[in-house]
Image (cartoon, rainbow, N blue to C red; front, side, top):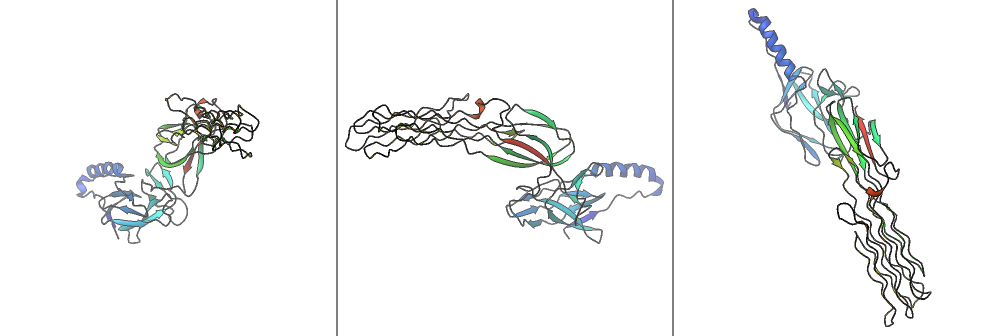
Length: 353
């Protein structure tokens, strides 16, 4: 076995029982809940180095040799449970998919059901997502300002976050028509397992989705001109929970300029990306048709970065003028009204057995 019991102090000689007993009581009070182990995750295995000390059920155990545990599912969150041996002097360690319930008297998390009922888990969790969502503690599902919530009970929690939707290409313009604006369709997500000490209060903010881009305009020449491509969807706003964040979504990608069903019509310009203008349309080869106008630029954000650029203008045909101008890119989620339902989420769950 890799863990051995550390014997409790005795109160001999008998003449000093009271004094020793007070000393023993103080010593025991300090070590309740003690865990100086330092496990670390190697990707597929978990290593517990030599030297750590952990208390469980009033008994102190020391790690006397390095322990390596293999994760059966590498991307799952694993806790380490201390398993006492039948000899009462040693113990081993095993992986567990849940942390157990916080016990304020014993100052640790203990499993209450199943094979490991009554056993303590270490104050540590591996990388990965927990097997169970747990019990809901609080939830934010609409865009709005920070709200402060108290999680109450000590123990392990998981925060699940999703940013507002962003990205989304604008549609190409069709015969004599402007293309539709891009619809934001992409978000980022994050799941974080953390331990709550029962005192700190936590806050969360949910970000809004980006706005759709504007449609491009129709061509300025004859009836066979292409319209401009639609603008790209805007960037989604970040969702945050304390120091954990889903980051900013980039601006939406501009839509491509459309092509014509007429062989004599030119090609629409490429859509702008990340706040840049779209490209000019191209007239048909060997003819004098003008190029389309550039796509409109995205809206400037408060941090001086731009959102998605507009689509490129459509190409003119051989007998006509330039194609239409591409639409503007959609706006960032920060411009959406507070309380809007089109947003990400911030959900907190309490983990137990």
